[in-house]
Amino acid sequence: MNPRLIDHVGIAVRNLDEAIPFYRDVLGLELIEVEEVPDQGVRTAAFAAGDNRIELLEPTAASSPIAKFLERRGEGIHHLALRVADVAESLESLKAGSCRLIDETPRAGAGHASIAFVHPQSTHGVLLELCSR
Image (cartoon, rainbow, N blue to C red; front, side):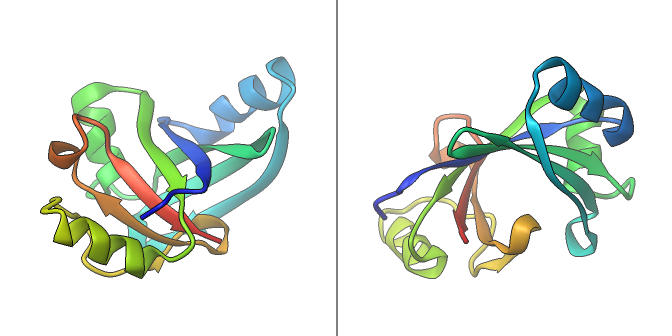
């Protein structure tokens, strides 16, 4: 699989417009983009954090995974994303290693990325996203 680096940390928030000022104005991070990803039921705000990103995730539908996460756990870190050269190839490697996958094939994510998620049961409790840009 050979991850290249941490691509981003995803943070679930109830209200993007209320959360953005903390990261932008208080922490001084550069807001890169705000984007809606309809098929995931989420609106995102991406911030530059050195070579990495912080992505705030606001649900746009009550049935979205982020809405369910907020309901169960409240605001906070939702996932860790590792940048890989090829998401499909990485999924095959993980499948061969008996990892439980949420996504069997890559899909479109925020920031024009190809993404897939690995189930926390296989990663010692961390929702892991594979990401290539």
